[in-house]
Length: 98
Image (cartoon, rainbow, N blue to C red; front, side, top):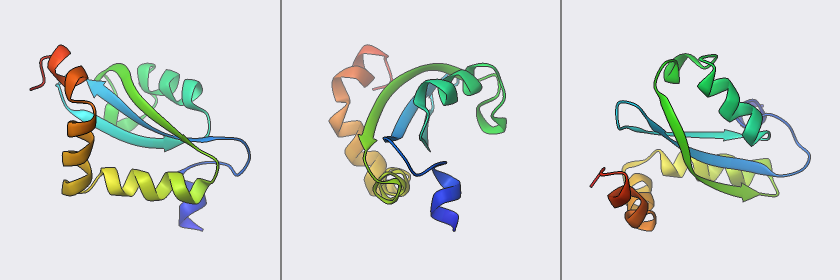
């Protein structure tokens, strides 16, 4: 099932996370193992973010994989990006992204 493959695993919490990349873009991902996944990004083991990861700036935790995947997909839409930027406005100002 595609949903399970996207957010790895079925037990414990599932995380939707936002990374600030060195090119000043935001990267949205989903994982069951937040710290391990962040380490993989920083170590260059994730193709899209290889050499670009600056830091983890936001995450949300969900009990169900399906809820986390749904949120990740929403945050990747134009409306989701707009609402996320509104939600973390102060952080984005601090990072000089707005």
